[in-house]
Image 1 (cartoon, rainbow, N blue to C red):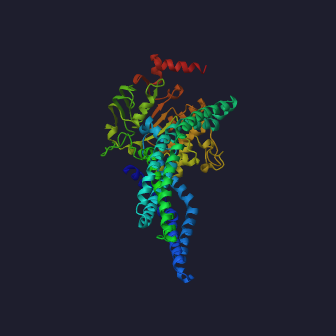
Image 2 (image 1 turned 60 degrees about the horizontal axis):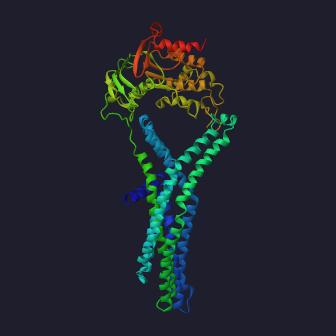
Image 3 (image 1 turned 30 degrees about the vertical axis):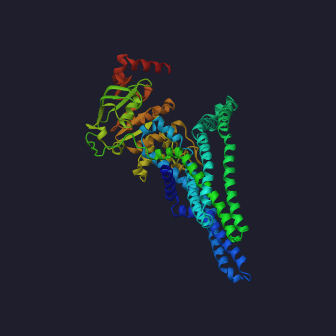
Length: 593
């Protein structure tokens, strides 16, 4: 119960953060319309009926106060209802936007090591329906408060005349609660865990049929009907299992409600008996009847809302677990500054071993490497050799299992992460294609220099992106990509040059190029790396590439195999050695003959 109530108040707090005073007004409006206003009505009606029975020559002045209170209460109801009719959908939409913002904000606070954990990806996948669940949880919790308030007021009114009505109605409601609670526990997994497979298959196939990169093949090979059959198969299995768990509860719930209704009918038998005996006036009978009805419904609502809220706790756990997720890699509480000289800093891997969390395979073993200040180095090797892992360790996306990484002699674990990342510009294989304006794609390289247009133009010119800038209708303000209105898509090489402009705009002392040109043609790749070689003379450049035409001009080339450096030297030296580098180079060269 403590957890259920705790989540209820957390949902209220989210509503308050999203909508402020209006969230409280919305809750009060619902309470007033469903509980307070009907209570005022029945109290006034009961008084009016009693006056009509007691006073023979009743005048309008005698009932004027009843009419006045009724009119005022009705005006308040009309005002609150008008507010709800206009603002309720808006407030729900604003709360959904706030939840989206909270999720996005949390994602900005986490690190790659967290994102690469399978259990975290599973958690993210289960957040898809959390907005609707939180909205429903809030509605249910508000409904619970309303039902409790309605039950208390009805119990007080009824107990004055019939003290046993409230206990009888509560006892009669318990079987209905037990059956409903068991029904929810049996069927709730079909709304969450058991629905995940059909949801994932449906979403995957919808993406295949609608994505620009995959829909063409679906049309050519006419795979649409086969793909649809896979959705139908998953749905059929899901609905069949759901129906088996769901349908048997109809009779059980019906029997529990018949028992509940029977007790209510008995209470009203006692109520009307007193009227027939002349011990209860018509007004009082009406009041007791209406409030007994309210007592029955509110008792059922209390247990119904509580059961529903408790069933959703498991799903809300996912949301609050997500908000409580911490970074895997954090900055030290007392960081050590990186010495200014030499600049760019010397990078040393000393006796480094590493294996990814939750795995036994060592990616790197007793690994040693020193990159001098301003050196241009290339890392080559077959897939799985450990090249990209090296970059992840250098960026401190993960910590080494053994050994240390030194930056100008300082252990990377002792360096503030944000300060270290300021030293690095990067262009990755899966770089981001920001579907925003052309200039924003560049400014994202260093948001502290967002107003410096000369640096913007310089970075664009260095990358070669200026060559196609004039073809864009809105130039720097042109939205690129096809996701948003008036957006213009770019070719692979154009996107690459724009991303390179972002790296140049950052103007960091270390530039990392991790397979950044694998998706473009050889000419575009050659142009990009010529730019890097000629314009980054005072920088340390680290290149990972499978194309040997890219790496042959590096100062040193490191050939990595099974987590070790097996060859080292410039292109000429490695070709003379006739080792793995020469073998791979010659295999690739054959393709160009």
